[in-house]
Length: 112
Ligand SMILES: [Zn+2]
Image 1: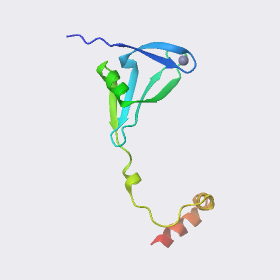
Image 2: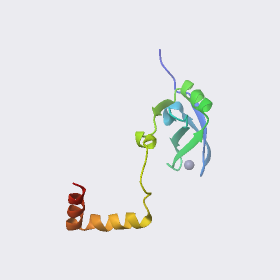
Image 3: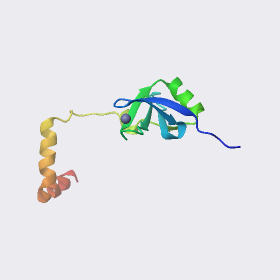
């Protein structure tokens, strides 16, 4: 059996409507929050476009032969965070420490 790629119409923000094959699109769905999106490279301007959409559209795309990747949110999002929030000054101080090898080593030693 030969599987033919289905034609899928997409809209490039720069060039307008384009017709691609299902193999030229890629979709992904977050299994934690059902966030769904697909992406394609416009055949005219070569711009990559990523569009969020509804899960049912992804299901239709998948039934047309579009590859769908599943992904999950990083585990760090579900960690309990304690302590004070970082400020811009903390980031600047950290940047300064990173540029100074001696200060960076000293800061690491203070953690022990
Ligand atoms: Zn385009």
